[in-house]
Every structure is written in C-alpha cells, then in structure tokens.
Image (cartoon, rainbow, N blue to C red; front, side):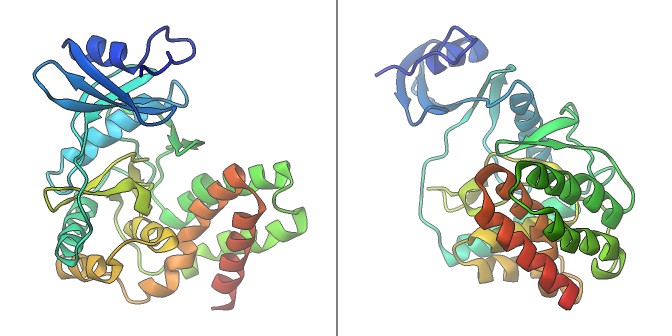
Amino acid sequence: MTARPAAGTGEGPGAAAARLTGRPVTGERPLSGTFAEVTLDGGQVVMVKRGVDPGAVPAEAAGLRWLAGTDTVRVPAVHGHDLHWLVTDAVPAGRPSARAAARFGRALAALHAAGAPAFGAPPPGGPQDAYIGLAPMRNVPGTDWPRWYAEHRVLPYLRRAVDDGTVRPAEAAVVERVCERLPELAGPAEPPARLHGDLWNGNVLWGADGHPWLIDPAAHGGHRETDLAMLHLFGCPHLDRVLDGYQEVAPLADGWAERIGLHQLFPLLVHAVLFGRGYAEQALAVARAALAG
C-alpha cells in the first residue's frame, strides 16, 4: 500500500524520503495520514512525517537538533527535511519501566540545565513562527519569565478562545487576573531552560533499548517547570520515578507542586483553541485555583 502524495508536493513519503536522504527506498508502510515508515536501501527504517504547515517542519527539525546537541535526552536523528517533509530515525518500541523512568528524569534535568539564550528563544535556525501540535506558536524572546509567559504563551490563546466563543468574555477575566499576579505566583526566578515544549506522554516513546525517546518537540527557551507540568497534565508512566530522577540532578524550587496548574494554563488554552470547551473549563478551574491558593 502506498500513501497518497501530500497536497501541493506531488510526492508521497517514499519519494520524499528518497529525495531527502539520497538513498533508494525498498519499502513503505503508511501509519496515518501524516506518518509513514519507510525502509531505505540497506534495511534502515526511517519515519517520514508530513508537516501540517510549511513553518512546522523546519521548526521541528531545528528543535530535534537543538535537543540532540545537549547529549542528554534521546531524540531521533534528522536525516533530511524541507518545508513539507521530515525524515528521522524510527524508534523501535519497548515498554515503560521504573528504571527507564528514573533515567528519563535525570536526562530531562540535564536537558533543562543546558539552557537557552532567553525565554522564548527559538532553536538555532528555527523560525520564530513555530507550532505546538496543530496550533501556531510564536517564539518571541524575553528576559522576564512572568511577563513573557503571560504575553506570549497564555494571553494569545485566551484571546483566540474568546474570539472563537470557547471562553466567554466574562470568564476570561479570571485568567487575566492570574497573568497580572504572575510575578508573585511564579516562585523564585530561574534562568531560561532548554525545553522540549510539548512534553505530553504521547511525545515520550519508550524505546526497545530501555531508554525513553522524545519526539515532536515545540522546543524553545522557557521555565523548566512547564515541561514537568505537561507530563502531569496528560499522565506519564512511572511519573513518580521520573520526578525522583529529576530531583537527583536538579532539585526543584520549593512550592513547585503548587505551581503545576500555573504552568498548565498554556497547554490547556492551546487545547481549548484546538479541541473546544472541555479544555477551556479545565483552564478556568486551574486559574481559579491559582488565585485561591
């Protein structure tokens, strides 16, 4: 079975892989409308992904290389990309384990400690106009995390949700009050961390080699607690062991657990924009709890 060509590209994943790697293709297995496994001459299996937008693929490729450059977490190597297609290593699947989770926590702490030039800094060579999942995300550098987080992560998606009717104007006021109080709610100041940026469980692959691998980054400079809040939001196997491993390498500031909801406002509002009212209600509940706490 051969996948259909991507709209506007005139080629399918096998042809794209051959062109971008310079190697003949001997097999192709579509996994979805976006992904396909392609076997290259010599037996190497690669993952071929069709981008949702011409800006998304360069951002993802730059993010993968930025994360890989730290030699901390495991990420698939990039074998080629253009505006429409991304070719990376395929990761053989394994099973989650407590040992692998602790290893992941230590590696994630080291990744964050590698740092970034500023909050909102894009990966080198990555576009300012990037994506988180299917939602546009602008990487605008800033030096003050509370102000940057409000202006470039929370409020743009809140405004979009209000415009779409997902959040009522009167309800938006509670999120706006959280943004106003962020300097006092955010905890001790920390330097910009190198974030995966979209670290939900679906972007953590438990490899057959016993190591977790990270895929589909929305990488940028941010607050390290944001990546951890994403793991809490949608669940992660052996999350307690991940946190134990993390704390061994880079202990979190006092009160971090009470700030999880604060850092979840961003992904919850992104999901409200993409998927509707249920996530908007979660975002509003998180905002009310932050103000009450």
